[in-house]
Length: 356
Image 1 (tube, rainbow, N blue to C red):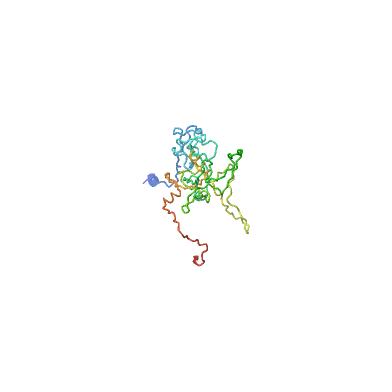
Image 2: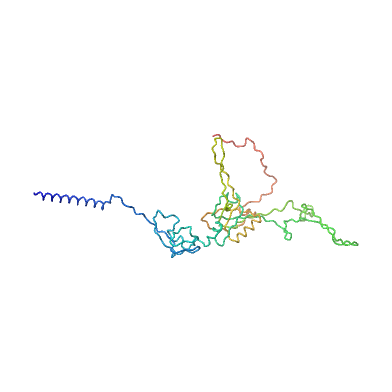
């Protein structure tokens, strides 16, 4: 074989090997995936922007919105990705065209950008906020929190009064002397009124069946008021428990430090001030009724409701007669004997604590 032919044959073999190697490499990259580094594709999210200038208190419509693609890593929780969250709401600030929209730029009602307290923005139109006194017993052991729903029970006392004097019965009696005309004398022009004071309560005459004589009875004590309790309001929203912070007021620190023997300060908790008022969201008429009851010294008891309970229950007022009949409480009979209280317990009768 000539030298040129052998060279040509060698070149052909080399070319065939290179083609085979290239086929294997390309085929592996196509069939089994390339082992080289691939630039990752960053996912994007469509957010909503202002498609036109939006003024304060403008109601948001679909046609006033536009969209913008942002990398997912740049999208925050407040950005709007669902237009239904802001459709028909009202802008609280002025928004320029193309500006990304966030949830805190909108409100359910217009006029929320007006100056005033944050508490007033929670009150719905047609309702008002009013504060009433509370205590540990009347406020579910201070378990009520802002936003809870409650019922209100009012307890008051009734007494009989003189319709003319508007004073509590019984009236006091008095004797008027020195009035009128005495025969053969000049008319008396002055009068003297003598009252027995607290011991001259007006009583009543009763016939004693034993001696068949009329007796004049007077009360042995002041009139006892009659107690009644009734649930007056249901499903009322709590705006705030306790006092509101005044502008510029610094929140009181609930911890102090003590200096022990080793010189290291130790924080000591200071008891927080217990709330004595609660602010409720009610109708204007209910606010008038609560005001009257407060100034009538009525006592309020709050009951806590479940957050998903919107039912209303018709209740019956609780009086002494209601309790006796509803719970079958008998009136004790008048017996010629009573139970003696044990003022001192014998030491042998006191149970002892078992040893561990």
